[in-house]
Length: 382
Image (cartoon, rainbow, N blue to C red; front, side, top):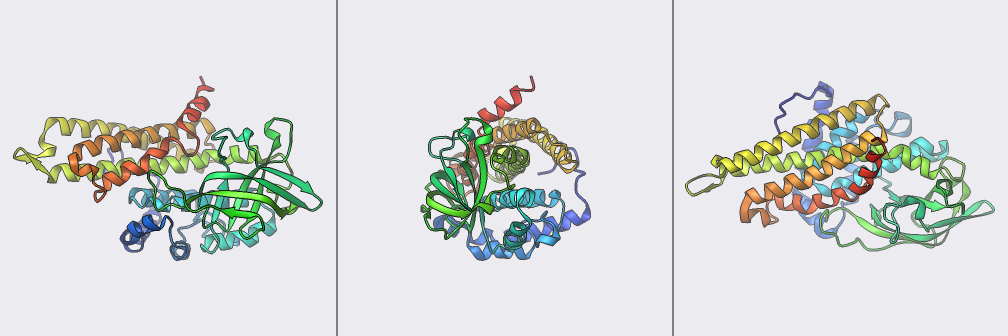
């Protein structure tokens, strides 16, 4: 989409990386994505190819097997992957969040073991946070880790886990205390293959059909006590809160790009589709609707780019990220709905990108914290 205000965040080096990301999607993802939607997962060789190109975890330091780039490169990957409609690649973003937890809170041994494998796409990460009966209430989790000597014994269940079926490592949100306060929560690494750790088949979802989402089950799963992230019980809630601003911003980056992609598809469609003897675009109603969408898209773009700048300076607040997530999640749903209407009957056919975007964007107001939770966070600033 042509922006009314030029973006100034990116250098020529960034734009070269962007072109490489575009080629990767066009040549190695888009032709096969429909098949992956039926299989409900992205093949491991695609993860490994992204790793080879330095697009899986761009900002992981070189000493841990990463390219050592800034988070602007993560932003570029998020924009190109989500703007392409290849929604199965959302799992790459979740993988990146797992790597961030290990980088920020893991021991040196954990970093040296896991991060090179994750950068190469040889190990896939997931965050086991949400439970069947808790939703966004992290303090209500029931999965419990009990210390027994040099081990933790974990029991519980998690749902809606991105990369769950294929994950080689799960960062599991567990209860380790009984005070009823935030200090009861800890993050513990659980490796795939541990006895008692099992996974469901991929869940049936409204959209994001190529993105692996499943349930995880823990039945007396024993892990070494050293798998506790941060080395001290009760720090999990604060670790999650520290990284949620980035999680919500990178989600908002993707939501914004989905909305911009829907807009661009619709501009092209309305200029090429004729009814009553003239292009759909030539009707004033069509032009005015598109103009209103462009106004809202530019507002979203300005806020997102401002938040990216804050993030690069280490100044992004939870409240600013909540605004970004809330606005772009609503925006993507609203724009995609309006764009589908301008496509008419064709918009309801999944051979058109707008129909797939309609399915894929509905969850934006739910994951990463529902928009109601975002409004609760924002309300604290009033």
